[in-house]
Image 1 (cartoon, rainbow, N blue to C red):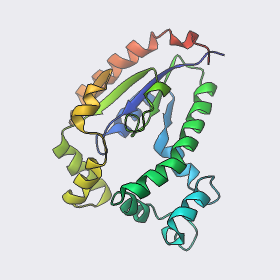
Image 2 (cartoon, helix red, strand yellow; image 1 turned 90 degrees about the vertical axis):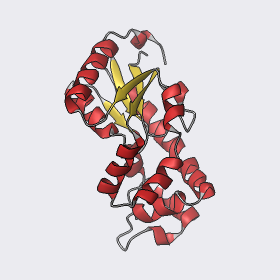
Image 3 (tube, rainbow, N blue to C red; image 1 turned 45 degrees about the horizontal axis):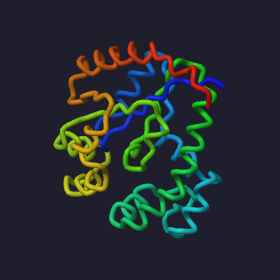
Image 4 (cartoon, rainbow, N blue to C red; image 1 turned 180 degrees about the vertical axis):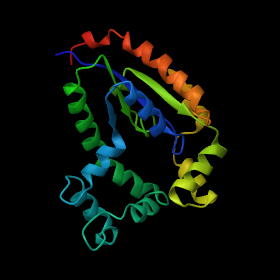
Length: 205
C-alpha cells in the first residue's frame, strides 16, 4: 500500500502554525492536525476523556460533562508529572488516529501538524520536519492576545516546550512567521512546489 509524503509541521505555541496550515490547505493539501484530534478524543464520550478523569478527577469537567481545558492546562503546565501522565494517555491515541488518516490520504503529500513532534520523539513518524519559527517576544504577544494570559503565564508554557534553538537545529526546513503574510505565503508556495514533486509515495507502509 502506498502512502503520501508526510510533512511534520511543528513549532512553539504562538508561532502561528494554524496560519501556515491554512495556507497549505488553500493548495488542496490535506492537513492532519494533532490538536484537532485531541479535542475530538476528549469530547464527552471520547475514548480519552474517561481515562483523563480517572487520573485528574471530576473537577476538570463542567456541569455538562465537557472538559474544562483551561483548568487542565493550568494543572499540567505547573506539574511535570501530571503533564507526562496526560501525554501518556493522549499521545498513543493521537498518533494511532493520525496514522489511520495518513493511510486514507491519496495526495502526493500531506501535512501532519504536531506541536510536540520533536518533544515526543516522533520524528520517525514523518518524512521531513518543517518548523514554523517566530521570535519569542512575538510568541508571547500572540499567546496573551489569544488566550488572555499574562506574559509570565505565556513564558511558563513556552518553557515547557523545546527551546527555539533546539527546534531549529532539528528542522529539515524552516518557515518564518514574523507577521509578514506576503512573505509567508511565498514560502508556503515554494515548499508546496517542492513537496508536490516528492516520490516517497512509492514507499510501502
